[in-house]
Length: 386
Image 1: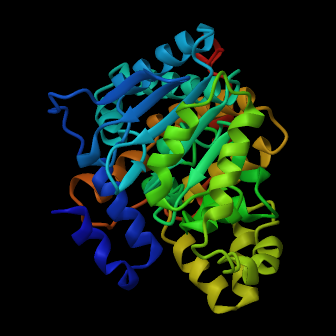
Image 2 (image 1 turned 180 degrees about the vertical axis):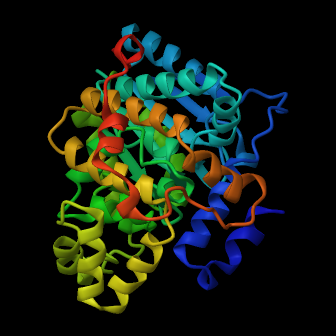
Image 3 (image 1 turned 45 degrees about the vertical axis):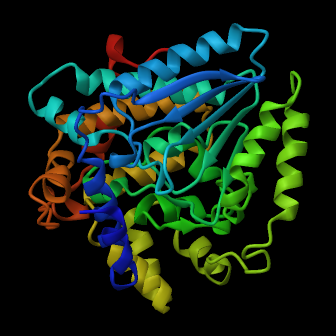
């Protein structure tokens, strides 16, 4: 089934259903590429990372994460490399996430990959967030989950009219990880809370207007933009920003359209400012607008455990540094692997594809504070360390 067929009837689907379609594709990863899954090349002044698994929307597997991390560390030390560019092969996706199906299988079999995958992935996210050289992501096409993790923490994120951003993890019994606890609460108002709990999708220029991307460029200009960046002579962040600004100024697509959520921001800010998921649900009910009721419908389909973990993750993350957030998220990843809903979410969305997860516990009120505290607890020697 080609992705075009999957995405064509999008208007008929709720965002929950669309999320599941994307997640299905993430689960399709087969390690059959004889070609390299990621290209790491020096071009001009830059180290260029190209994700090369277009058949599975360039989703990240363990080996890609390791290769990118070690190469980034090398490039950081090389005086002749003064810029990093990361992009994906094909028109469909920059990177639709991490290989969650492989992690789920490893977790069930009690294999080490379940610990190692998230440990290495979060170390990569942290390395990008603290990188000493300008780091530019071309987030063209679908950018979700792990794809957000390898882009959003860098200095520059260039969206195009084909960008689709989402963090849909609550639909699979997980939480918006890869530093979601850091960048989501720092978006305007309570926007990040909406994105985290519902998996709401932002597209095109809205990805920039919502604060995820730093720049917006027409997709047919990306090749020229890359050439101009590669031609720079040991550029500073200011030099890179200048080139990106020039391209952005020429872009006219949806230039005057208001941010898709602009008219709903007051409602989002008041409904999502509650400190419990139960109160958010009540606020949405009382708001009663078609928008609020649509979000309510979506939230009610998500894993109750994921919703509770996610809200606390975002609230706590709002005052933590990126490394502190990733340490917290590593603890949460291991809690999800000890639990039930992650495996059930992967089963329903990626394995049996019946789209009908049976969450346990099924009700928010069945999730105790004691259980939540346990999810956030230190893992002692097994904690993530930088």
